[in-house]
Image (cartoon, rainbow, N blue to C red; front, side, top):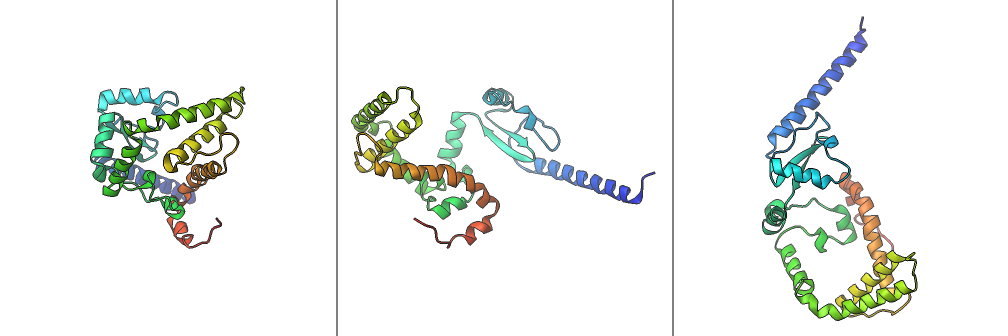
Length: 236
């Protein structure tokens, strides 16, 4: 015999499962999303995506569902755009309609919201991209060939002092930093050794790569905490 508390518990579990199932089905059917493979209840297509060479899996799905298809992972719909032409149409030519970005609280707090990676699509973003291509595009890049050759020579000289490449990443970062400074502001930097200006650039890049990325999910999940820190003084 099942006692009354056990009965109430089972009834509660039943209604919870029923509610989740209904919300899953209604949500899936109410959205105007591209077609995709049928998944399992709740987990969706989670276990269908291979860990190794997932691009082969996506390519095979494109043959059945087209260049744009959808997957469901734990109730979250993922749209897969699997062709260069579709990417160019959606995110470049028709970006104001299809390429909206979420609010990036951490970028606003750090003052990076005005940089190209964090810009919203629109006229300002398009102008920034055009200006970028005017200076760093494939054609105007020819005027920097001398700087590229000099940077390559510096990298070879650094590697000659580290034949086992124990500091390979450091050498590459230093070369990229000095090349960026030369093209951007005409700064040559030190031929050998650690350049102070380049070091500051690397520190900023490290901050953006670690601090910004690690905390961006926190501010996205708890936007009120980001607004409460907007006027908080920080060193530097």
